[in-house]
Image (cartoon, rainbow, N blue to C red; front, side, top):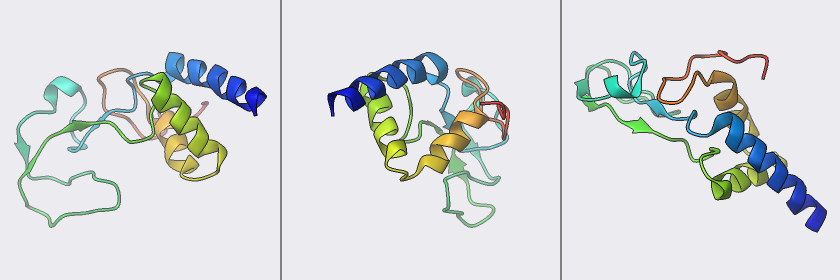
Amino acid sequence: FIFGVIISFLFGILGLEMFSGQFFFCTDPSVLTRSDCVGLHSGPIYLGNYQPPEGLLAQRVWINPVWNFDSMMAAMRTLFTVSTLSNWVAVMWSGMDVVGVDHQPERNNNAQM
């Protein structure tokens, strides 16, 4: 048990170094940076599986997924979830899509990850 916690802690530190602050995204997929993610838009809205009706005005919001590496507690929670094989695919896609801090993710931007 203690060995598993130590290994998770080490991978948590690695996740913090590699992905801290990079999983954020804007609900408007046409926005490229955090500073542009303000105001209203009428285009498609990225909210996971939920797709609201087309043409609806929506607020642009810069949000962070539940599974992230922005703090040690969040990293440990994310690694525990991945180790149980629950929702590991969402974490994998988020890691592959990172561009940088305050930048909108791009699909398969870091495919070598």
